[in-house]
Length: 94
Image 1 (cartoon, rainbow, N blue to C red):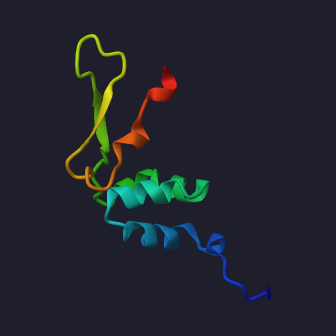
Image 2: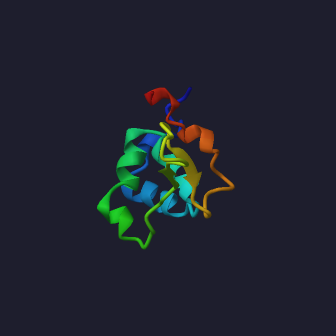
């Protein structure tokens, strides 16, 4: 490795913010935010939110029956095709 190697860590936050603003899918933003602390900080910042992005709602939990112990995850229509509901299972909490 030479001294001229490029590293994503060397990008200034304002440049990285411009790159992340190009991600149009809420799912892509969620994945990018889970990449590292720097990316999560930029995506969750108030400045990033002011660029006209809507709040992302992946879905909601509800009880199918009154006697049901576990709520069921239902993806929102805008993300249903991209989200596997099993990733949001609360089985581990019981």
